[in-house]
Amino acid sequence: MSELVRSYPLSVRVRYAECDPMGILHHAKYLEFFEMGRVELLRASGFSYRELEDRGVFFVVFKLNVKYHLPSRFDDELLITTSIERMTRARIDHAYRVTRDGQLACEAASTLACVDGNGKIIPIPDEIFVPIPG
Image (tube, rainbow, N blue to C red; front, side, top):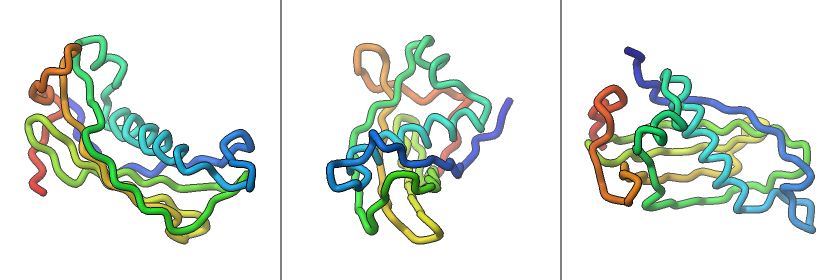
């Protein structure tokens, strides 16, 4: 049995196609980075999101709050740190910090609900579940 990793750093480099006409990383791309962070945090814990989906376990974004501090541009290297802040039987709260050259570029928080293929709330599988009070 693997142990749940509570925080995971992921390095990404801003691609040209991710920038808006002003040359700044488009704000919506951060949401993709957050998803990448969650998937890699789960993988670092020894679990595959794809395998969970094959078993009928899905995590859907219920709430997301994002605050942008500094713009990022093509070829900037960003460090996205994804952390689990709270976990109950049916939800996971994550926090995200995106830094560029050690400076905070963006921060966010999300709440994910655990659901089945029909969108019905189900318990987080026992092998993943670790009660983390908020």
